[in-house]
Length: 164
Image (tube, rainbow, N blue to C red; front, side, top):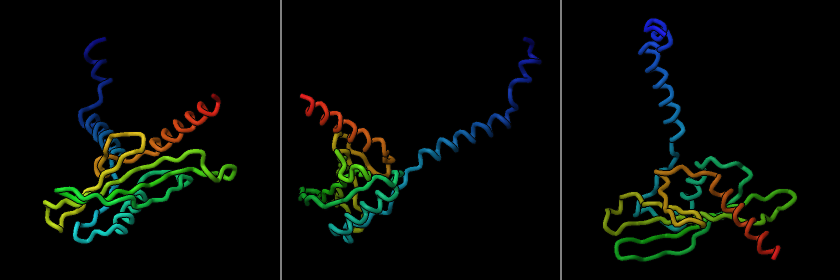
């Protein structure tokens, strides 16, 4: 192949960069993390925390057949912060099985720093029941697959235990 033929198969620089730009934009769009504006320490209440967790959950891309309820678990007093613990319990009831065989929990912690001004936003973390990995909502987009995996693993365990 001579240089002239090779040149014909190479897109012009302006075309190549626009294609690369398009691919970069698509990749960026996939990584958009939806989050909410968290309340400040001085405006925080246990109920406001639960409402904001519900607001965060509403930004997650989860099929409507998933149902959940959220609840406040406990308040924890530490030297440099106060931590409020919540749980969202997820299941997928069906007509044939209105009570799901297994559920998956997501645990939330809302932290109010005693070192920062009261007007600072609270910090929020979450983790899945089967994981020790702690995530921040603004850094990690929640995935429906995480709930599916927890429930599938529980059902496998239930079936193994009941067959013994």
